[in-house]
Image (spheres, rainbow, N blue to C red):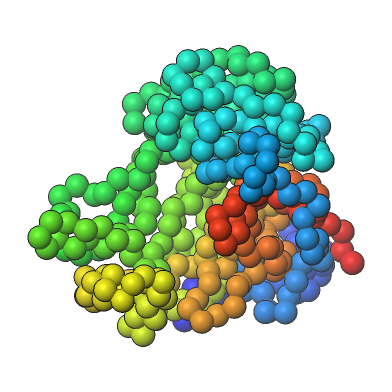
Length: 404
């Protein structure tokens, strides 16, 4: 079934002047923009499968950082994030060594900041540094989630200050243009659900002021589903085709929600709903055959005994009502939203739907399927790949935004 029916006109008066030209450039993709009690609602039709944005990603990366052996500075392990600085340097959050590793525009290692420890500018033993990105001015911020710390370094790597986040907020989800921090908890299970069945985790979000103090608590939102088997103990498994949480900084707003429906909600830093972006799509439900095939694929490399044991434990895993409406959500330096279509069983790798800063669909675009994307800049895509033996590399792929 379809998630919405679209009118063929732009309703919001402020956007009317620009809608006609934009729709022509977008090969007739229709968008409805309206205002509802101060909330901007953008409803988009689903583009035809052949609709492609005129932008292009290179066929191969121009920079690949990482090595199997040699200089340890290039041996990357547990890369959690990476960011490109205005001068072309790339800062890699290498949690395996507890460092920020800095490389020049050609991939040459320049310095390593931080290290394991509890002192100023140091990082803990688990998943840290977890994120890295720009801080207002020319500084760089990195987070240590389980120590609830955010450390700020200047452009030369000198440690400036460290914030200890309040209460339960561990993870730095992003930094807003005014220096406020978008925070989230580590997902937890809903209390009182210890029997066999599907349990959905929850995440709490908040905004912190630039000094680390709590600015606004934003409430609790659903994360992903897990399947609990409470027989002779308790086993916890990821639910197949589970949904996931969305948490991004978009312009001066924050995106919070999940991919249950094709709806992206953006809030002000005070927690006020400001934008809703929707896209028409086909709602599909998983079948028992989909689940059985996915389980068989998941345990295909296990021994026969291990596979039989796992499949017996999961034989009663229930089906979720619907597949996720989409996959990952990213934002770029221009304020565009990039939304990855969900890969259905047996289907090829899907494209990404690109929305402009007003939430209108521009078209589909393919990105490298094996790239875990950290950042989309004006003319590049930055991310991580891992080969068959687990060697991690941070790669930069040129992005051409001109229509050809």
